[in-house]
Every structure is written in structure tokens, then in C-alpha cells.
Length: 252
Image 1 (cartoon, one colour):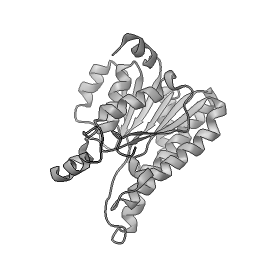
Image 2: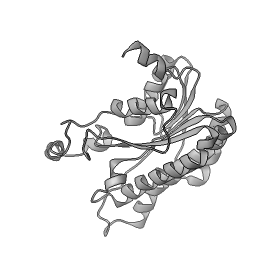
Image 3: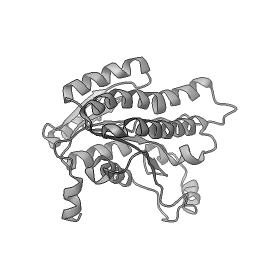
């Protein structure tokens, strides 16, 4: 990386909370923030198996929270505790998310609601809790992980699409509410990224996907982490209320 660019993206002295941080996109974001000097609190349902090695490498700058975000009544208390420990967060990445796919007419209400609870309600509650302290300090960057599915829809994912579209609405509304207090709120809309979720897609289906992606490849978690790092940094200080697609040109 060009040294002048690297210096503008450093997060030295910043404290970040990243949800869904144990694998995939969340882990890539966590690792990129650590590499740029941030102190990071990761949150996931289960700790990564190699957490001890991760913390040793991070030299005291990596902390972990284990929480079930489907238990929405407990979320604010958990986040308030972490925030107290950190002394406030400068950066929040709402990345935690699940899928429970199925055709709308066969989807149970339980499966519809659980996806909304974790992908949307939990993200709203965390943003609200962390955002209060950011407002008090008059600085902060909130990054919500939406999806191209939240913009364009996708058959068999009505619950996921609704949750990610809702997160875009929260992003734009919250951005308007807190901009005057020095807090920025943006969303990233990944396309098809190589993660555990997309590993289940048959190879034949992946080949068909390539026909719709001008860059002719699936994205990597690092592609999303680069965008999150930019939005978290002072380099993006004049950007708020935006939804940035990182999809290889899939929906040009």
C-alpha cells in the first residue's frame, strides 16, 4: 500500500466494536482495524477457536464479547457494559447477520422474524446504544452491513431482503439525526462475497453468477474490509447517509 494512503487510514487511538466478528467479513474487518492501530472489541455468538492466538498477536488490543443477538431484551445491557469498559467507541460496525432462506409462501413466521431480530432489530439497538455516547462526544462512525439483496431483492430471501432494506432505512434516518453532532452513519451493500454463506452455492450456480458480474469474480471479505476501513477513517469525514455497493459491478 502507498505509504501516504496508509497514513491517512490509520486508526491509531481509535476504539471499535465489530459484531459478527468471528469469521468471514466481520473477521476481515476486525483484522484490518487492528492492523491500522485500533483497539477492537469483537462480538459473536461463539468465540473463535483461535481467539488466544488472535489476542496474543494483537498485543492487548483485542477484546471479545460473547452474546446471542436474538435475545433483543439483553442487547443494550451487554453493549453498555462493553462501552463502559472501552470508555466509549469511536467506530461501530454492525455486521452480525443470519439467513433462513425459503419461498415466501412456505416461510414460517418464526424464520421471518428471527432474521429481522438479528439483522435489523439488534443492529438498531446497538447503533442506538453506541450512538448516544458518540453524540455526547461529538464524534463517531457507524457502519451498517446491508446487502445488494436489500436494494434489489432476491427470490427465496424475503426475510433477509426485508432486514437489509430496513437497515438501509435506519442508516439514512440515523444519519440525518446525528450529523449535526459530528457522527457519521453509512452502509455497505456487499454483492456475492466468498464466505461460509456463499460456500453452499453449487459451482454451476456460481458460474452463472459470473455472467452478471462485470469483474468476473466473487468478492472477498477483504474487499468489504477495505471499504469499512475507509468509512471508519477520517478520510471519509464528509461522507454520511450513503449506501455503498461493493458488488463487482453486478448492478451497474
